[in-house]
Length: 125
Image (cartoon, rainbow, N blue to C red; front, side, top):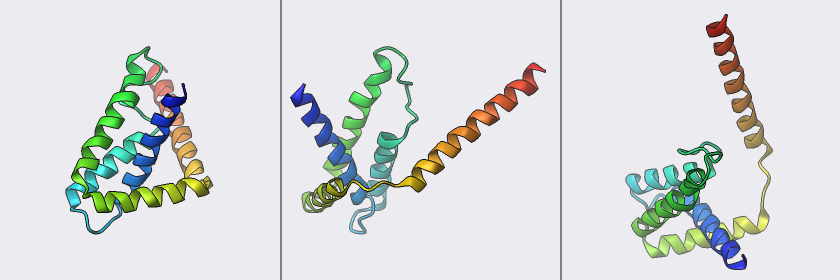
């Protein structure tokens, strides 16, 4: 169980490092775009395969995210990746709370649920 926690923490730090990498001006646009896509998918509450589907729901988190991270890390020069990993370590030490982002995400989910309910009532009635 301890090794699984270390593995998850290492991938989380790599994901945060990729966030810093996609903001680095020394990287080409396609590497930044791919890094941004991997980071967005990793931190997004929306998955390709929903988590409530047994076994398959967790496979995208266990396979797709680490695979995407590994591919993007190969595209980034090691010196830039090391800098980004140092930034990620410092960022992880602070653990800032971004309440604005949380409010925006919750608001979007509430609006989506309201739209679905509105659409269902129009369709059923």
